[in-house]
Length: 199
Image 1: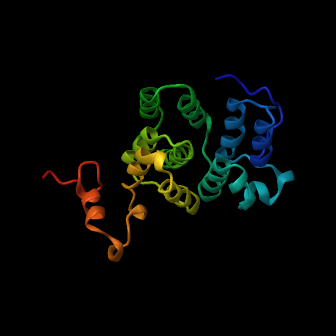
Image 2: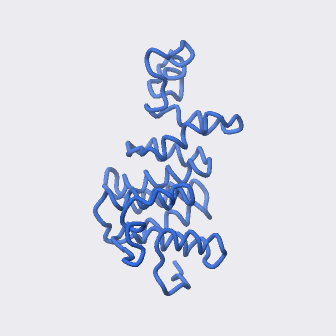
C-alpha cells in the first residue's frame, strides 16, 4: 500500500475536512482515520480526538463510528489490515473483500468484531446490502445509536428495499411483540429471515 503523501498525522475532523476540500485522497483519509484504532491521538485536538465529538457524527458519520470504536476498545497493534480491507471495499469486488477478510482476520477475534462493526457502518451508509449481509452473517457486533438510527432511516427509503431486507435480520429492527403483524412474523420465519423455517 502506498504511503500517504501527507506527512502530518491528521485527527478525525482534520482528515474529514481535508478530504472534503480535496487536499487528501480516499487512501489518505482512511489511513488517518483508522490510525486512531492503533492508539494514535492528537493532543492539540483535545476532547474532539479522544472524547465523543457529537458534531462529527453529523459531519462525517464514518469517522464518528471509528472514534466510538477506538474509545471503547484496546488499541490494535497495527491498523494496516483495516486499511487494506477498506481499500478493497472501495476498489475491489465483493468476492475480493470476502477473500481478503478470510486471510486477514481469524474468526471470532476482537479485531474481527471491530472490523465487522465498522464495515457494517460503512456499507449501511453507502447502502451496500451485499457487504452489510456479509458482516451480519459473520457474527454479532455491537450496534450503537448511530447505526440504529441509520438503519431505521432505511425503512423510509423506498428505493433501498434490498438494504432494508438485510437489516430485518437484526433483532433491533423487529417490531415489539405487541406491534407485530402476521406479515412481520412471516418475514422472520420465511427464507432469509432470522428464524427461517423449511416449510
